[in-house]
Image 1 (tube, rainbow, N blue to C red):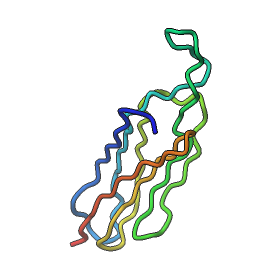
Image 2 (tube, rainbow, N blue to C red; image 1 turned 180 degrees about the vertical axis):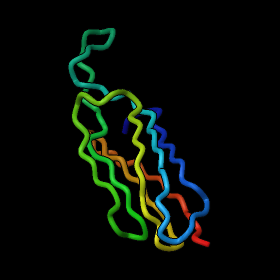
Image 3 (cartoon, one colour; image 1 turned 120 degrees about the vertical axis):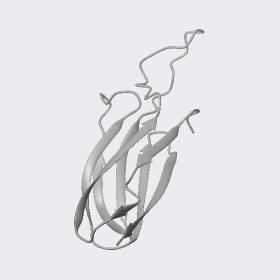
Image 4 (cartoon, rainbow, N blue to C red; image 1 turned 90 degrees about the vertical axis):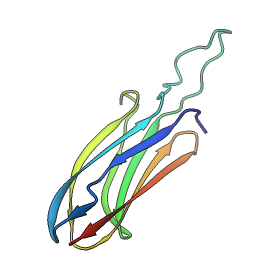
Length: 109
């Protein structure tokens, strides 16, 4: 697991039924390409976020494959329709096998 990795998500607390909301995500991650060397000359192992998913109440909203050229601390912003009160689940997948998750609830009123 990469050190210092921290996912952040911004989701409105409430929405109207059927409303499109804007979701913003950022994960603090160094995104090592596997081509750099440390101070002793050893290759730093590749460690990038290669996939991001978002689900709402268990249904897929977004599924993105990220390529090695993506920047450090990847930021994603997208819209989602909210049909009912529920929970968003955000998942980031790392090359080293690590999985980072965050959840946010939203109330439809």
